[in-house]
Image (cartoon, rainbow, N blue to C red; front, side, top):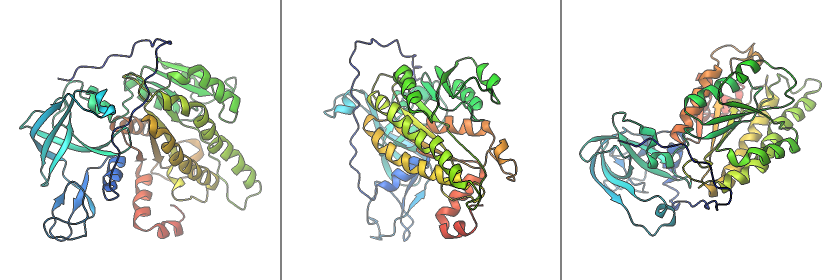
Length: 413
């Protein structure tokens, strides 16, 4: 049985903050097929197109028929733990601080034997569930969990090391005026987050959902204007060392077509609120989170960006939003690289049209704020890097992979 983790104690301000260390990160280019699967929460292995054998570890030729046609394919997740061991001594600096560490050999139902890290509830000879997780270095590792849910399952120290579970963590939601903010705050608190800070610019201006937000126990409204560099810097100086997960909900959705009068001004306003705002957040909060990647059990662990799926396929009616979110996506790739040395993962959440006033004329299916909030919590608990919320987002993702030119001609619909 896994012991429940305890909330972190008040930190001694004079104590040295441990420097983040990363696990070994060398992988072959072929092995990054596992990286893609792990980032999206899929269990995928190479499968030979000639003899239909699943392979592990990744390789460039099938050992059975020497075929080079080895695409990564979603595989059955079941397996049997053949042998397990507990490693107590190592020369690796990252794992030395995390001993003991359980590993074992799992005979996968699809064929290969896989060396995997083990959840504390796994027992030799029992059935287990395999998954691919991203470690602190952003590299894929195999992980085995018990087939049946166990007590305090998510509190397993090895699983928590490979995810970004909100439990006992402090979270900043950057824009409380976003209609998803109340639902997101409630979902995070249900996931046992310790405290949720919610940024609000010009708090004297009322907004829809304000009363609901202020009524939530565990939520603290803080001043934050992403268009004002000083406002962002002041908040980072005040609570930067307390933020374990940052959820950037900044948005500026305004329907406009490219030939409309004032479209350039609208684009500039949108970019300032989203792209430039994200850059200000990165400069103010990024260094602190980077330094706190190993700050005890509840260290800085994740940065979350809420993006429209139209960042991947422009929607003409929401052109400025498509452009700004596409730019924010590019910035997120840059930021992910900068945060990785601290073991802080970055998760992009691509969502279809939200069920809010700005998407009034867009036909269903739409994404309810509560649906988006639950997806964010699930993505953090699973340690993902990319998630797609809603039928429209998943459809665009699939069509983009199949034929991006067809999707372009159809206007992202």
